[in-house]
Amino acid sequence: MEDKLDIKSNYSWLFIFSSISCLIYFAGFIGKLWFASYLLFAIGLVLFIFYLFKQKLTIFLLIQKVNLLNISFFIALIILFFSLIPTKFIHYDNFSHWGIIVKYLLATDAMPTVATDIIDFKTYPLGSTSFIYYVCRIVGYSQGLMLFAQSLLILSSFYALFGVIRDIRRYLLISVMGLSFSLMTIFNISIRINNLLVDFLLPLLSLAVIAIIYSYRDRILKACFIVLPILSLLTIVKNSGLFFYAICIFYLLFYIFHSFSKKNIKQNIKYASIGFLTIVTSMLPYIIWNLHTKIALQGTNSKHTLSVENFKEVSSEKSQETVQLIVSKFFNAILSIDSLSTRGLLIFHIITFISYFVALFILEL
Image (tube, rainbow, N blue to C red; front, side, top):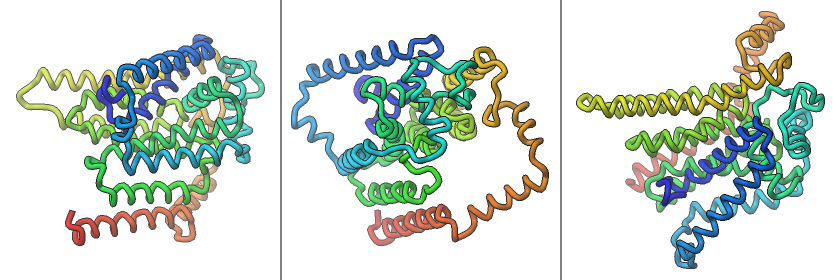
């Protein structure tokens, strides 16, 4: 992957996982979930065997890949595997949607229809669900395996964030980032990693996209290519993913315009065209899902449906006093020092500032 497509190893995992998710997602619309899963697995297996013979994988070649970062993530992967495999669902939302939709896909190898009574939130897109389905279809079904499959998306997003480090030998920076990410999981009391809720995955995918764009800011066309499947996945993980998608697009457009040259108009047109094509292509999964809900799921609606009409309908059900109460509690939760998440953010920033000043004034890096 890194050699053929010229993608840094930090980004290759998330690039592949996102591409698989999108391909399985599209396969669901044509009723080929089972076939697409095994076809992708067969292609991957053949390419892996071909790589082994072509590269003549040796112990020396493996040693070259070993560094503190890779060792740390390998240990984290092992810990996640053995801790999540025996885990059972405990969060309510796993039984109301996130767990049950994967089980439905595995049982039927088809997307839910209007007549599917067991699925209440039919308008939820099937982004991360498609990847979990793929893993469970190939390896086998269990609640722990579903959790581990989603943790692969989370861990690959974390791994991508380290791609902004130019020198992998900067152990202090790696350690601080690793500690910060650990704190994020500890203070993330609402979601945790032992359920299939995607609210933690959404910002991680967004940060990964931003990290990729920043790393390839001088090769903006390569950046557009790498982030395309990740942006596409971001639009179909959950309807609220569009908010994070918009942030990523603004960041991408900033560097596209920054790459413009006053003298080379042809290059500017090329960059603008590629940027426009990236935006349009990455929105296709979401556009197709909207068409799917209007045609195949006609008449189905819920408070989670993302549309102006539904937003107005849901909003009209709440009085002005209720809205003000929600806003008040929200600001109290994020500003109060008694909030565990707020304390986590404070600790995160304190560690960051201390590390910065230590590196700048004491270590003189």
